[in-house]
Image 1 (cartoon, rainbow, N blue to C red):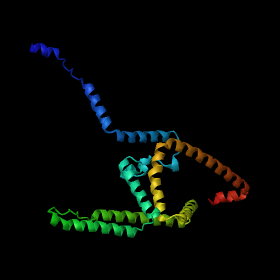
Image 2 (image 1 turned 60 degrees about the vertical axis):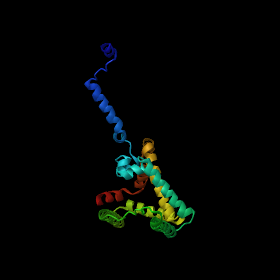
Image 3 (image 1 turned 135 degrees about the horizontal axis):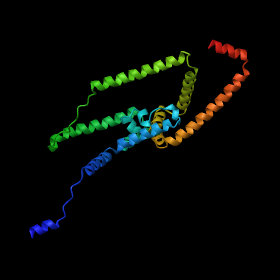
Image 4 (image 1 turned 45 degrees about the vertical axis):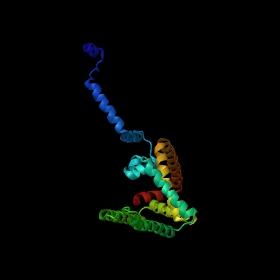
Length: 259
C-alpha cells in the first residue's frame, strides 16, 4: 500500500538548465528596476541626440546627470519621494511662519531653545523623584572633515564667481556682458517686489517642480525648443543680411581684411 501511495504522488519534474538561467535573469531584472529605468532614459536620450533634435539650452547629458547624478538629483527629480516631499513641506512651513505669520528668526529660535532646554532640564531633575533613568542627551559635534569640505567648496565657488565677473568686465565677450547685466537687472527688479526668503522659496519650489516635469515631457519641450530656435536663427540671419546690405562694400572688405 505504501508503494502504491508513493507511486500515486506526482513527482516534480527536474527543471532544465535554461529554465534556471531564465529565472535568475527575471529575479535580477525585478531587483534592479530603478537602474534599468535610468539606463532606458539614457538610451532614449542618446537616440534622440542622434536624431538631430537640439536639447533645451544645448545640454548634452540627461537631466539626472545635469544635477550631478547623486542624491541631490534624486531629490530634485523625485526619485526619493519621501525626502522630496519632506523638504518641500519644511520649506513651505518656514515660508508660512516667517512671511505670512510675520515671525522673526531670532524670536522663533529663542523661544524654541527656551522650550527645549526647559523640558530637558526638568526631565533630568525629575528622574530623581520618579526613579527613572535620565534622558540620554547626545553629544553633537561638527566633524573636521565635513567643515573642511564645506569651506573648500565655498572657496571654490566664490573664486569661480570672481573669475566669471573678471572675464565679463574684461570686454572680451559682449554677449556674456549683456547677459549678466540683464540677469542682474531682473534680479534687482524681483528683489524690489519680494523679500529674499520669498525669492529663495520660489527658487526652491521651482527646483522641485520644473526639472521633474521637464524630464516627464522632455521630448515635447525639446521639439518646440528646436522649432523656436530654428525660427529665431532664421530671423537673426534675415536681420543680419539686411544690416550687411546697408553697409558699403568697401567697409565690408576693410572689416574682412582687419579680421
